[in-house]
Image (cartoon, rainbow, N blue to C red):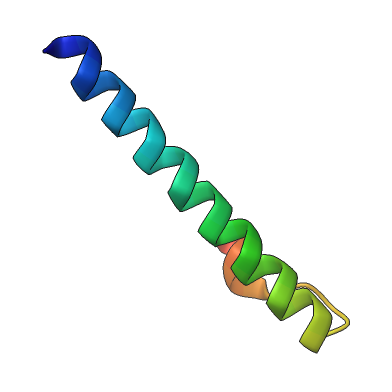
Length: 41
């Protein structure tokens, strides 16, 4: 049970990171300079 929960959480974190990377790449392609919001976070 616990191992399944850990795998689920890890998969969610990986998906979240992938989504963030996709957002950063899309913003980077549209803007030449990096967004200030990402640097602030």
